[in-house]
Length: 416
Image 1: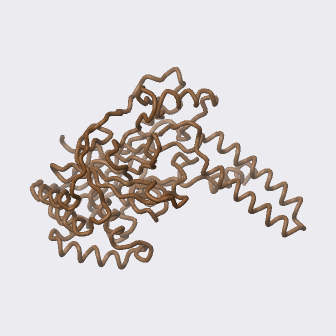
Image 2: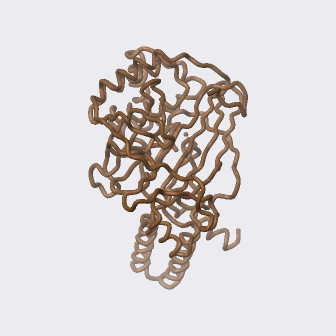
Image 3: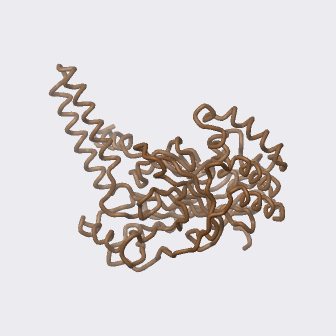
């Protein structure tokens, strides 16, 4: 390994954490996904929707994560009068004028959460059961850009060079060397947690075919990559900074194999057995209680948090209508701390019901992070998962389920 390889490897270990379906699956995103070449998600270290979970967001076991009371989950304009707009990754500023993110005001109404969940249970039982050899999903994932990749790499290399020089100079002075190492760690932490002076997001679409039997699945990522700015003022700041590259992905899509686990908290739940979960409330509750005791996270989170997280995972998986109804009933019994709102619109303009829960940020400030699940109150199916930080113009993470359903062959998509 040459010196450049060594430096690149060190940089890889120092970059801020990011989650996609690969990393655990949540971010399913392997499956909230794997760390990007350089950080493109914020430093916030939790995944939807558990305030204590690492890594970043979720995409949860099969979804990715988050939520702010009565807020629309799209990149929003918090100041100024222009809508956010996007450019393709690598496109020059003069190319702006393509995809425009919706930023609409919707009238939301806070409603009784238990009543909402029981209503969702009822409509779920009226949905027809499906079947197929694969579970297909098309998901649009948007994350707040934390760093400009080239700028970040250059700063990390500079810190590494400075640290190597100090190691050589202080090799016979252990106390001073130890102090220098701590200072290096502080600077790296500061670099990893300092956000850009402008608000931008990176979006991409992922198509996934997960086998419900023994066949191999398929996952295609990196489709329709876009960089968007929250406001024209943010884009102007980016240009003033020299228009640095904000996406480090190679051009074109990539194909991988999806993982088999539905929920990171529940290694025994797979795409091939999740449809066999109980369809009555007590039966499903007993099964979830049993899974919680066996979960790697059982000692780190309370049952209500576990049920919320696992519920979000299951609602984006191929469970039966009966299991979905039972799940909403179980959640209704543990709805304390959840807030629900009707008339909430997802990134595609679909209106549904939002379930919100809040938690502290990484500094411990209460109620700074909102985790949101938006579901269709006419079918009970999940539409979007989001993570929102108070006062930010762009969600930390947004995962919109554009299409999901059963198919019989790789490459097929569900009939609409």
